[in-house]
Amino acid sequence: MPSNNIILDPSIWGPHFWFFLHTLAITYPHNPNAITKKKYYELIQNLPLFIPNETIGNNFEKLIEEYPITAYLDSRDSLIRWMHFIHNKINEKLEKPKVSFHDFYFNYYEEYKPKEIKMKDFYRWKEKLIYTLVIICVSTLIIFLYNK
Image (cartoon, rainbow, N blue to C red; front, side, top):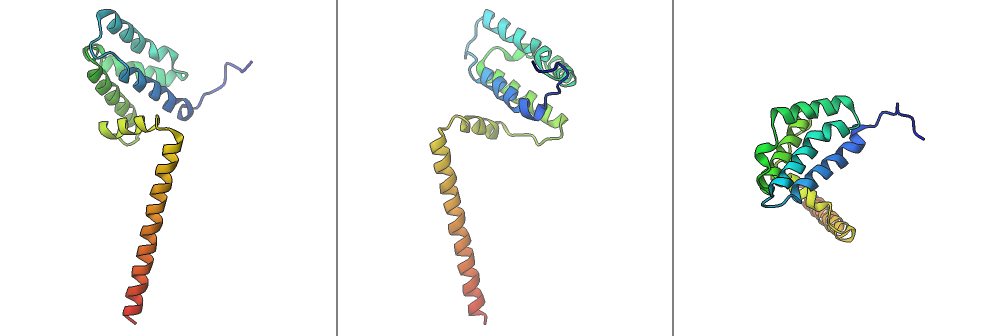
């Protein structure tokens, strides 16, 4: 049985935690009823209790007190935007770059791409890079030989 004194590295669990939170927002109903709003409100309000680092949990709690979720529980779109805003606030506090709304969700959905497609895209990108480098080298050689 692992010791209770183990310190869990936020750089390991943090990205998974955020992926889960963004998944909650993305799967939130477009027009939630009162019960759903209440359940999501309670979940978000209780999250600091489950964050495996007391300092980070306390900071998250202060953040959701400063920017309450209540007004953003009326629709999926508003919850998604609130979640993105909160994530950027945390990034700001950690001195990490802010991520645009579009870029963040583009990257989020990229996680769901099948591995074969990701590999195909990667090799396609690599192939373009090689062609570009070859063209640059040939162009440089031509210019060099022309100026001789």
